Image 1: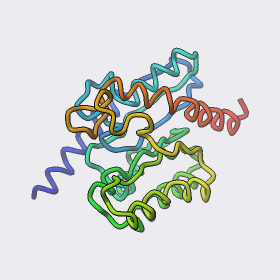
Image 2: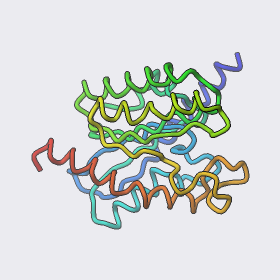
Image 3: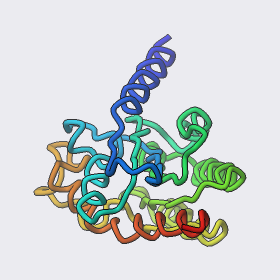
Image 4: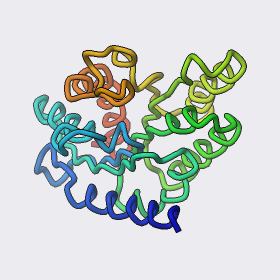
Length: 218
């Protein structure tokens, strides 16, 4: 029963997030991007305007890049959870997806083979739909032991190479373990931390958008 309630709450949260998606520009040819992720994307502990998708939208708008970004982040989601909700989280008409999943897999010690298989299926399905992808990598906590760390950390570069997607190796680069950039739990970025992520990831998001425009012939 508790699991059903949790899933229902997650569905409601995602529906609300999609309804409050942010337009970086009002152009008719704006690139439509969905951020499929967990609490890092959902903006756990932050106002909606400070969440990663909203700040990315603002950064793109500031550069005059027409993009419409939908927040499809669900706190607590795993790679397998993202796969289960992929089809309704990424509606028809989506041009690109930023896949930001795996942190909860590592925190829970899920077998890296399970995580890799789920992410592989997500990337394959998006490729079948001709949707461009930016894969945001994750690293295992350093206390998980060398064997787990080696297996988990290898997931993302291997999948990025196999699927030829845009790759940002570590979504928390420059933020992880910095108390000034994280909330009190030490795991979730605060507003300043999100801005650091955006600044570092932005060139890869621009590369993603360029791929979409090239595919469009525009």
